[in-house]
Each structure stands twice: as structure tokens, then as C-alpha cells.
Length: 110
Length: 231
Image 1 (tube, each protein chain N blue to C red):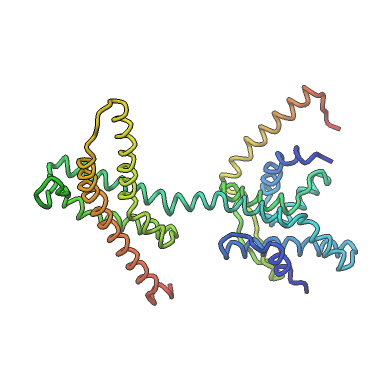
Image 2 (image 1 turned 30 degrees about the horizontal axis):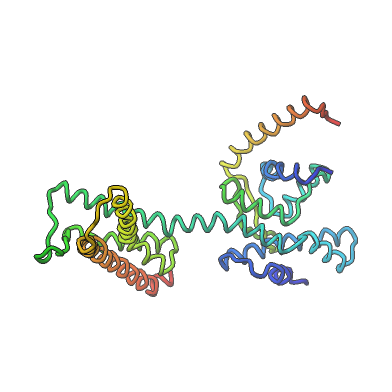
């Protein structure tokens, strides 16, 4: 498992990355991240929704209430053009960090 | 069928957001818990276990409430304050100053109301424009959702700013006297304060407030008209 301190910094990248593939509601965002990271990154309600609200305030994602075929209302989040633009530099920063750590601590892919 | 919204509402009680926004947060968290519970049921848990596991996902509800508030409210309050108070307030102040500077450039002289050493100096054309400026500031604040008190505060903002400047003159004057060692005549200072206080604060403040009140009355009349209510 990844320590909470490290996870916290990766949360923005994780959320923006899964939303890049298409709109998702909060539960799906958490599930997709958990599945794609094989359970290494897990969001609690207290970490997911405040983050989604902050990203929305910044204009990087947009939440819209939608009604599914079964009549259920869910708030779907979409990546905005500003969010798409922001994703590339965030990815670059993290890649740079991983490369630096790899050089420094000889961290390599498992 | 379990009422997830009621469960969440109970646990997030005291979420100090606008009612509509609070309801949206509750609905969203409830939907998340409902989906989690259904997933647990699909995995073969009993309903009681699934509900317990779903609720446990929230962890400490006080922490969740605090984090949601921090994410939503901090920026919201700041943005609201800027839109409802500072933008219209400084807009009216700047307009007052610009208009007065323009009048001076045009050579319009202030009018002395009555003779005597303490007679206030009034810029009649400037004063005539102040109700419009006060009304404009009130309208901008009101459009941004400002409360009645905020709207009135904003409409008299230039007079309040001048009051602040006036009050600053006291300690500055005393400090100058202390440095130079000169003795000021209090009666002269009092006369000047009274004269300028009337000419630059009281009368302009009343003119601005008149505009603000009129704008508010007009706004209330418009918002309570049937046409607006239907629209």
C-alpha cells in the first residue's frame, strides 16, 4: 500500500486521468481509480468529494446532474477544456518526479 | 428501500452551506453510499453488513463535513465578499473620485452654502450625481446576491472611506504637532472638521444612501412583480 502522504499529492492526477476517458460520477471515479491502480489508490468520501469540489471551483472539471435509464440521479463529472490543458503539465511534473526518484533511490519498475 | 439521503442528512447536519448546495452535497454523498451498498450486496453481503460497510466508508462524518465545507465555503465566501462588497464598493468610490476630478477639470467651483467661517462647501453637480452612483453600487451588489445591509453599506462606501480618511487625520495631526512642537488651536480643528464633515461626508453620504435605498426599493418592486415571479 502507498502511504497516505504520497497518495494525497497524486489525487488530482488520478481524478483528472480517469475523467480523461469520459464522464463519471463520484462513485465511478473512486472505483475506476481503485481498479486501475489494483487497489493501491483508494479514495474515501472525505478525500474524494472535497477534491472534486475543489477541481470544480478551479474550473478543471464540471459536475452535472444526470438521470440514468433506471431513473437514478447522479452527478456526472466531466473534464473541462481547462482541465484537459492542466493534465499535461501535471503528468509531466509527476513523470519528472518519478525519474528523479528513480535516479536517486534506484526505484525501478517492479 | 433505504432512505440514504435521510441517513446522510442526519450525519451531515450543520453543513453550513446554502440550502440548495447543501441538498446537492447530501444527494451526491447518498448516491455514492447507495452504489457502494449495492456493490457489497452483489458481493454476497447481507443488507445489514452492506449498509454498515457503506456508512463506514465515510469514516468520521465530522471530518467529512469539515472537509466539504473547507472545499466549498472558503472560496465561496471569499468570492461572494468580493462580488457583493468590494467590487461595488470600490466601483462607487472610484466613480465618485473620477467624477469629482472631471468637474474640477471643467472648472466647476464648489458652492458655499451660507456665509461664515464654518460654512460647508458643497459641490452641487457632484452631489447631484451621487444618488446615481449609490444606486449603481447597490444594483451591482444586489445582482451579486448581496444582503440588504451589504447593499446599503456598499452604496455609502465612498462616504465611509472618506470618514476613515478623516479619522486618520487626527493621529497624523497630533504626531506632526508632537514632532514640530507647535500647539494647535482645537477650536479651528473642530470648525474645519465640522465644515468638511458636513460637506464631504454627511451630505454626500445622504445622497449616496438615497440612491442605494431607491435602487433597493426598485429592485424589490421588480422582484415581487408577477411578471418576474412567473419568469
